[in-house]
Image (cartoon, rainbow, N blue to C red; front, top):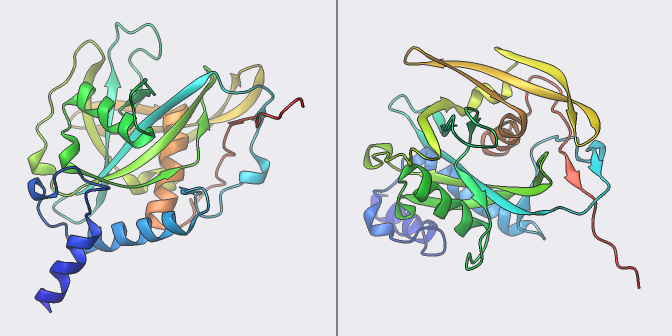
Length: 257
């Protein structure tokens, strides 16, 4: 049986998804199953993007302008010793001009030379928190979300097979703190509130999650919270216990000819 599992895992973690598989240990069976499921689902999608289970995509508010640019964030998940799925998060530096002090996912704008959004997300994670791309297996991307600054932000889901191999090195100019939270919490109504906020000239509902870890309190809200609910629904394959908010998106560009 063990001999049959090893070839499967070898095929699963191909160079297309992990730069140096030899540096990452074999994942747990649960992570291997999750990876196989996400890869299969992504490959069966015409666009290569996944929507969350039961997401209200048809009702998504649309901004009547094209996006101003492109960005990507890394939804990096791993298993803790109890087998629970968790996600890495950062708190942005208070000195930044935009979104200072807010909780976010590692990521940033697509730069010239980036092969794709996966490359962008991995590059930004390495620059911000010292996460070696060789430790992460990228398994799928989600549909882009439109930020309030007009950027199309693509969530990239990656699996960190062994959390103990990751020793964070924070870029203090950008990141003040790093922590992790249970992915499942973004599908629960516990510690969650919804408030009305102005978003690019429209009033829309925005969700907030309160979380405490090691004596520190964090508020995960806005686009980050929205992305994490979508990602949790995809990864854990179940709907939230609350009505998922529609995904803000930019209007498709149409030809004038």
